[in-house]
Amino acid sequence: MILDSTVSTMAQKVLREGPQALSFQDACVLTELPARSIPDLLVAACKIRRQYLKDDLVRCSILNAKSGACAENCAFCSQSAHHRTDVVKRPLLSAEAMISEGIEMDRAGATRFSMVTSGTRLNEQEIETVSRTASTLVKSTKLTVCASLGQLSASNAERLKAGGVTFYHHNLETARSFFPHICTTHEYDEDIETLRIARKAGLRLCSGGIFGLGESWEQRVEMAFTLRDLDVDGIPINFLNPLPGTRMENQPLLEPMEALKIIALYRFIHPEKNLLICGGREITLRDFQSWIFLAGASGMIVGNYLTTQGRDIGMDLDMIRTTQEYS
Image (tube, rainbow, N blue to C red):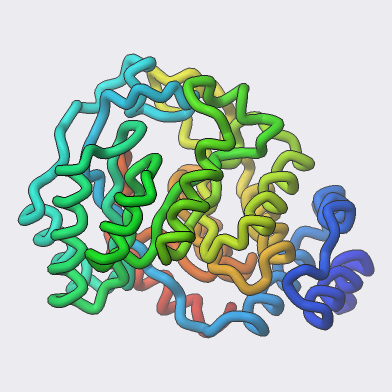
């Protein structure tokens, strides 16, 4: 079988020339591929992943460590105080509770554990609690410890790094040009500055976004190139789960093949970075969940999300085992 000529040309360019091979215009050409060429795009993306990354897939688990009452007005978020949802407001969990959850996820087969909190930022005492948790988990498990705590000061970033946090997760959510349609309570540059502060402190960066918010294909490429310019280490790819009570509650779901096309597109633009498939996977991809690795993904969240249920972690790990050999 001969691959679509555009796919073949672009894939060979990435395989020969490396991570910076594709231009913005090249990537936009890939977005215009017809539906019949998507299978070719997926196969090529898988080949790119195999050349640049190890076959070990990242298995990330997340903990909703502090819930609800967020002052930000992100249109998709059920934890925003601007929305009427059934999310319960809860303060930061104790270090003991977070350590217990991390140990359980380590035993279940996760490779990373991320503490995620609602709100714009944590106070000094909360940062200290997260740091103590990370320090214990690094010593008592094989987990890579991550944190997603909102905006950071330089001193807090340094404290997290000293405590044992490896990755700092802070999503851009969408393209700069589309961001005002999604959030108006802080500026896009504040998110970029947080990533730069985390990087300066020695933390590795995990940043991506949510797709299906109403953004265009060109805006999907725009965010991808912003992330490439920032040289983030990992990119979480989420798909909108339109939750009742949020401004996005009536937004239609992406079709499975469109979601897979997004994953493959990001693999072409980011050949050597981990692409982690996260929230909205089950409801969007449905029977095509196992295709994420064929599309170029190199990891996924296993188990539950922040305010919605994922699949049983055993089912996720079994899916990884049964598909890894063929993708």
